[in-house]
Amino acid sequence: MTATMLPPQPAGAPPAGTPPTPSRAAETLVIVGSVVAPLNLLIAASLTVYDVFIGLALILLLTERRRLPLPPRGYVVAAFVFLITALLSAFRATYPFEALTQVLQYVFIFFVQIPVILAVIRTRKAVILSLALMCLGTLLAILHSHITHQTQGAGRAVVFYSENPNRLGYPAAYLLPILIALWVCADQMWRRRRWLFAVLVAGSFYLAIWALAASASRSSALGAALALIVFVVLRPGVGPGRMLLRAMALAAAVTAVIFLLASTGQLPSTLEDRVERSFSSDTQDNEHLVRDRENLADAGMRAFFDSPYLGTGLDNFRYVAVDYDLNATPQLPHNLWLQFMVQVGIFGTLAIALIFLLWFRDVVGAHKRAGPMDRLLIWSLVSSMVGILAIFMFAPEMLDRHYYLLFGLGLAMVRGLADKETWEGRG
Image 1 (cartoon, one colour):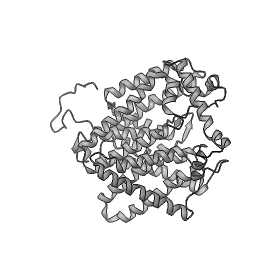
Image 2 (spheres, rainbow, N blue to C red; image 1 turned 60 degrees about the vertical axis):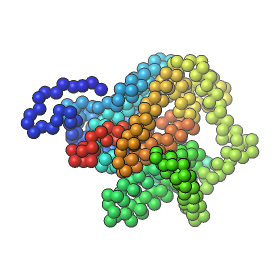
Image 3 (tube, rainbow, N blue to C red; image 1 turned 30 degrees about the horizontal axis):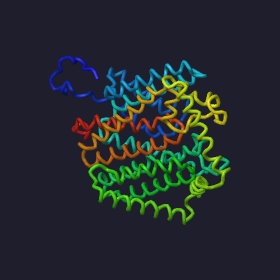
Image 4 (cartoon, rainbow, N blue to C red; image 1 turned 90 degrees about the horizontal axis):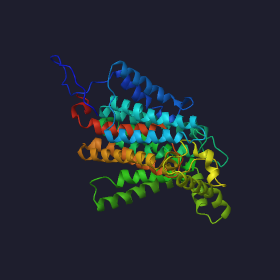
């Protein structure tokens, strides 16, 4: 971050080092836009309704001649390295336009979406509202699937914005820890209405668990389980004895809830059946479930060793997968890191990995100096990101903006906690 020389301040003006307060309109656009962030409402090509909200907020901020705050230098350098390797790899792409389209999406994420979030999300209240609205949008999509119950051939329910059933289950990885955090925050702020929040959270939990069962997404189930374990059990400052007790309580609670819902017929058996087939000794069944991904992984490793520094270009491996394994299908490898290695090379992959490592370092570091409510919110973001990255180990690359909304909110909390008066809403 470079320093900016400011003119002398008139009497009664805030100190020179105080960041200017963003306009209410820009803040409203970013916060209200959180409700559509998880819905992937496409307008044209990769442009979404949420992108328009962020774009309008950007225009307002620039109109006010505000300088957008970038993340710390390490993030910016890593983002530039990633984008440069992605651009160079696009020259090797079978369809360069598709590669450049994804490059532009990453430019938007790193240099528009996240800076705009940092510019306007400056209080705890703004973070809570953004998280609550993002969860609301997600739950409305799940509720729509629950009511319409549209399924694909295998009987797996789908969400309206995707034909991939897994996409219905993915949100559970961030919903469960964030819902608990919001519940506790709401209970502390509005004690007289705790019964209302308890009912809302119970209904939300049911929808999240239903989405896992109806989508039959094994990666989503794993991601949600890891997110809950990190949130409930692996909190900083909790000793081994308390961790064990928390783990036992969590296991008992989850088992009881799932057993209750399943025994009353409230949960589809799709996920259970699919997990059982995964461990089946039926050769045909195993081949149907895992052979595809094994072939894609083999093709991906061959492609990486063929060109370890420059890849096939973003969103382009599917066009050349069969060149490296005749049995591979035209898809991306079902592993985020292998995808990056194949599509942008080793340096681009290390750059994106560094961005996430820096995020975890900074957010966990902020957890140590935060108050009780902020620690709860921060750890819900950490847990959610752990769950999301666990899903990425088994799923195609996702550019959904709400994952980077969580990323940006984490950085906003790190930045906001440095100015307690503003963060508490008193500045």
